[in-house]
Image 1 (cartoon, helix red, strand yellow):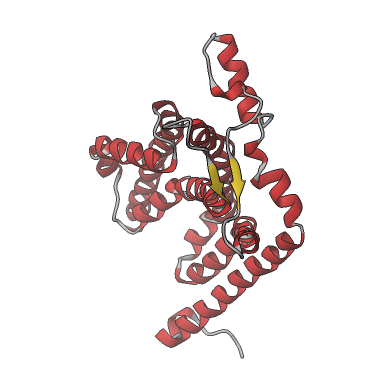
Image 2 (cartoon, rainbow, N blue to C red):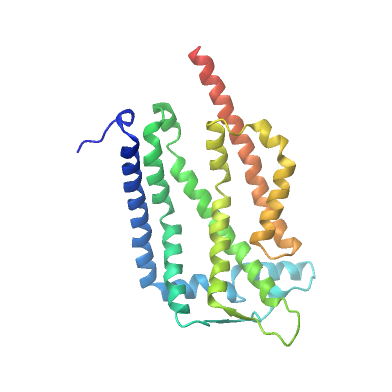
Length: 274
């Protein structure tokens, strides 16, 4: 059946179109998740459990930095004082399945965004579509940058802090595998989504919900929100929160600039149409 014009499509037609885009996006996630499940042993060894080893690049870098400034730190130890355990019958199997699914989501993210773009682009003007061709690339780059930031910065800082935190020598850190993987997963994916802030601001500005003046006016409130967000996704130590807060604040400033550009282009377009 020939594809209908966007203006001729009914509400049910739009739902049907959305359903097929969601099916394609979900299928891509499941296909990559299946491949990740096949290679799950390598996935766990070289990625998931890598931050538990003291030769992890982040620990090595911070250890060298602490030696240069002559500060005692836990980043130079031989091993982390914790043991990862599975306390339920299906614990390891569930961890394998869900880790594969989240790996599928991360790796399939560009295609998922592509399907989203295919759904919303028919409702845009030709000029808007032409000027937004790099949307998928930029969105994917921001997401992957955020994931890498979460994995190499947030995750090791959190694991090192929590593994070395002790209220008594009588208590051993025997970490359930679900809790450990949940930390790695939330740090990586949450950071990836937070790094999408410029894209979100772009679309909010396009539809008139946000302006540069609004972003500047509430900058101090945004700072508080950023610090709270940093406290949620990092361990409760000041150094980790500052490390996470800095790139988010930079993204916020970039978002203000993007909002200015969008408003300037809208004004220029309005003058040309007069």
